[in-house]
Image (cartoon, rainbow, N blue to C red; front, side, top):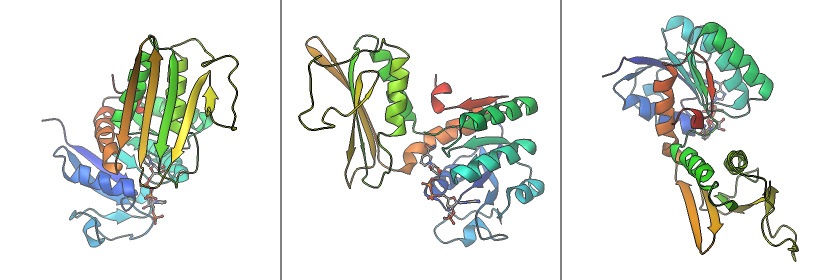
Amino acid sequence: MGEQINIVLAGPRGRMGKEALHLIHNTKEFSLVGAVDRKHDGQLISDINGLPNMDTPIYTNLENCLQAHQADVLVDLTTPEIGKRHTEIALQYGVRPVVGTTGFSAEDLARVTELAASKKLGTIIAPNFAVGAVLMMKFSQMAAKYFPDIEIIELHHDQKLDAPSGTAIKTAQLISAEREAKQQGHPDEHEAVAGARGANIDGMHIHSVRLPGLIAHQQVLFGGNGQTLTIRHDSYNRESFMTGVKISIETVMKLDHLVYGLENIIA
Ligand code: NAP
C-alpha cells in the first residue's frame, strides 16, 4: 500500500467536487483533512445535506485551512478565477495543487511553472480529467499517420456555450502536429448552405452537434482506400472525470514541476 495522502478539497458542493468527495472517501490512501467552500465556515462536510458522512472541517479561506492542517495536495474544482488564486496560495504553503478549472492563460501558466519549479513542488492543471477522452486524442494522433483524411464530430448538451469544444480543437491540434496540413474533400467543393462542411482546422473539418439529452461525446472519423476507422468517446456523467483526478493526485506527489494536461501524464 502507498503512503497516505492528505488532501484539501476546494469546491466540495459543486458537481465535480461532490464526485471528488466520494472518490476521496472511497480511496484508502486518501484522507480529506480540510475543505474550502464559499460558505459553511466552521461546519463539517457531514453537516451539509447530500454530502458524504465525513467529519472534515470546512473553511471559507484556503490560507486559514492550510494553516490549521498539514496537507499534501490541494484539489481545486471551483471556478477559473478562484482556481488560479488557490494554485498560487497552495504552492506558497508547500502544498501540491491538482487543478481542474480551465482558464489559465499562457502568462498564468508561465507564473505557475516558475513558482512550482522554485518550490520544487509537483503541480497538475488538467482542463480535461476524462482518461477516455485523452486516450481518444492520443489514438487519433496515432491513426492520423496512416489516415490523413479526418473529420471530427463533437456532440454536447444544448446548454454548452462554445463551439467547437475545447477537446475537438485540442484533438485537431494534436493531429496537426503529426500530419502535413491537408485541404480535404474535392478542390471545387462548395457549400450550398453556409456551414455545411463545419469548421476547418488545417483542412480537418469539425462539426458541432448540440441536443438536449446528450452530455459530452466525440468521434473522430478517418477515411482511407476502401476503409474507414472511427474512434469514439462518450462521457455520461462527472464520475467519468474521477479516474483522471485519482491518477493526478497520485502522480503529483512524485513530480517537482508543473504538468499541464492529463495527456502528458498518461503514457
Ligand atoms: P459547479 O457545480 O458550479 O461547482 C463549483 C463549486 O465551486 C460550487 O460549489 C461553488 O460554490 C464553489 N466555489 C465558488 N467559489 C468558491 C470559492 N471561492 N471557494 C470555494 N468554493 C467555491 O461546477 P462543476 O461543474 O463542478 O465544475 C467545477 C470546475 O471544474 C469548473 O471550473 C469547470 O469548468 C471545471 N470542470 C473541469 C473538468 C475537468 O475534467 N477538468 C470537468 C468538468 C468541469 P457556489 O455553488 O456557492 O457558487
